[in-house]
Amino acid sequence: MPDFSALQAEGRRFESVNAHFKLRNFAELSFFNIFLICKH
Image 1: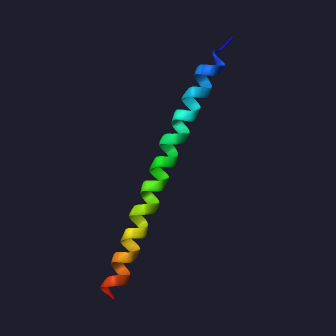
Image 2: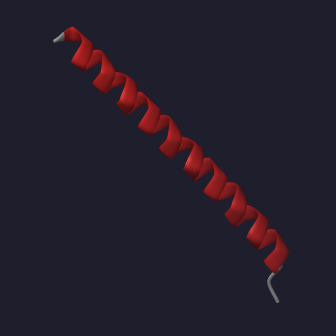
Image 3: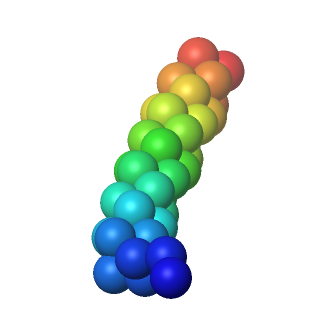
């Protein structure tokens, strides 16, 4: 039998890392868009 609690913890850790990267990418894109708008 696999250890499901360890598997769940690993899954949650992966999800939080994934969410962090998505948030960072979104923030960087937003700043980039603002930068482009301000230059015009």
